Image (cartoon, rainbow, N blue to C red; front, side, top):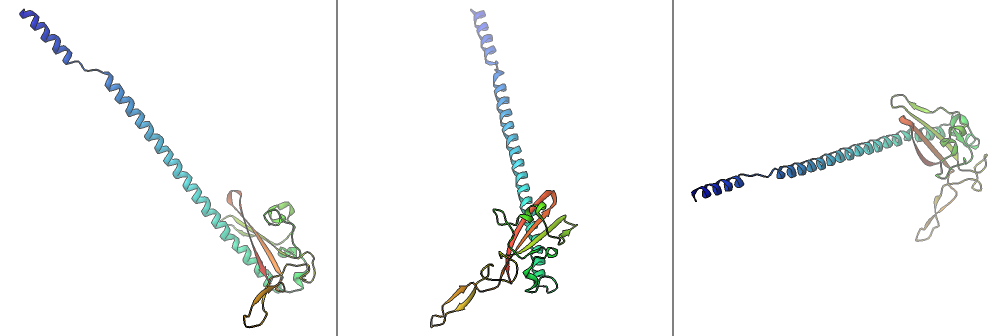
Length: 206
């Protein structure tokens, strides 16, 4: 009887000290999954950050090209106003390739840009481009008079600006009539590093 009791105590002590190894494997698996998720999230954040930097850099580069294009507009305006170049009524009646000037409206693409400034093969002007060796930027501009025919300006064949004329009366009503100055279109192409190009366009009334 005493022997039986001792045997039961030993058996119970053996079962109480048993620890399953299976729980440690589950914890390790969950830890690995969590670590994998964290790694994927970190990679996604890095890629998103890199993309944002690239987009910001491209926008800044594009803005710089547009700012450079203003130099082309200034140069074109200076030619039209300079009597030694295009700054006379007679000079503006005929095309002057040396000053990148056409006395008639140039053929344009669907965006309203002259074909000769978008396609080098169609470029017939001989005026020098504006180059900046420091930034690697080249600026090309062309001026075309918005007229169907060369020669003296005429409201019948040219696009003219509107001037405000008063009709009189107590209301002093004014309206625009097409008897103003002739309109000239200035188109600018800016070529930068990495084969990038930007276009801008404006009109001048002279």
